Length: 247
Image (cartoon, rainbow, N blue to C red; front, side):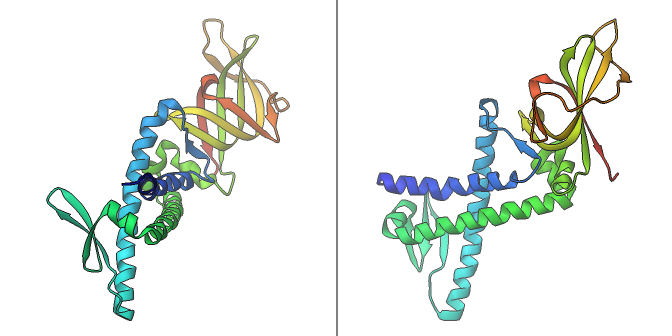
């Protein structure tokens, strides 16, 4: 098998999974980081996405080709056959090895690749739309912060962030609308981006670092705010609370 065929196989099998993963997190406040600590999880999920999309693409491809055969008489149905330990493609009554098929039919292989990318994009948008409306699916795909998907178009949630940053005997706290919440290692927060933040101070009692419930009046937007947005690293976060306006 040539190097070009190997590259094409990788493109056909993996790129749709990457495209799917990108679009299920596009335009959502909840995302997952691609840092080193999250690499294994991301790779496993991309592989699962790729398998799911390729199987779906093959099923739809078969349906379309059967429809074409029924309407025009073209016998070009693609099936996967298993003969012993070998898996082959059954196309128009002829068996091909997967790599041999790519070498023999490069144009059709590229067409299928583009088809898979279109399916990946369509499925991602469908999953995102269903996750917004059906919370069990949302929690599977986006974890405990799935309710934030409802705030994609409207500012329905307020985010309260108690930071570890201390000024004199006061702890810094921010409040605003969550624009981006990046998760790592499951449900740990990598960072948060808040829109139109308000800065508060919480007094620290004399026995330790636990803040009291007393909160001073709000002050002007704090330092580090750019274009109405503030970035807060997960290392600086003590606690996060999301408050919904429509419950």
